[in-house]
Length: 206
Image (cartoon, rainbow, N blue to C red; front, side):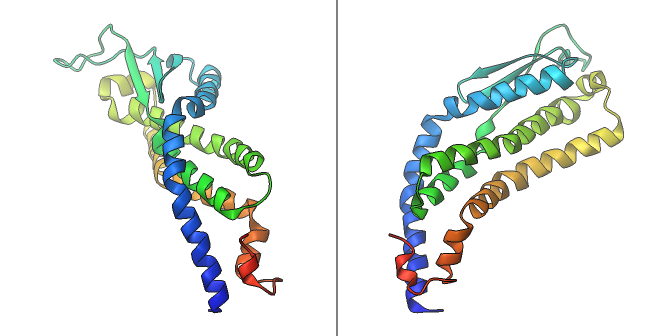
């Protein structure tokens, strides 16, 4: 590898590492604000497709709480009781790639970083919505007990789809989606970073 190009890549990695702690701190502090659009999206989805199971969607800090119309199982008998079933989902589990994305954006030193970040956040929102919805369905359809699962009316093939959707939303989307978004939004930067069409790679990062 060209030494100048190697040095440029090393400086870029150091910049990302330097921005990362601050990005994670701001992400954690601003979590209630960042989760608000996701809560709204889940409210719309549950109204359109899960209104027979979800009574309302609330936000408590960085958590999204689903108030279910399903009845919780009694601990002693396992039979559905008369209480209210609450399902909490922590969206931060599925948005931990956002601080890394912010660090990459800031280290890239491209113009209009705030506008780019807002666009990236909007693009990632549907993927986070997928993950939260999949966890909700997994909780009520697979892990809440037979009494609750029976109330959902999900058949075996539907449970298989829910399990796949949850695994995909928990293991793949949180890491892959932010990386793909950054790559697609910085293709020219990456081309310069590897030396395509640029005589002096050291000028890639100002």
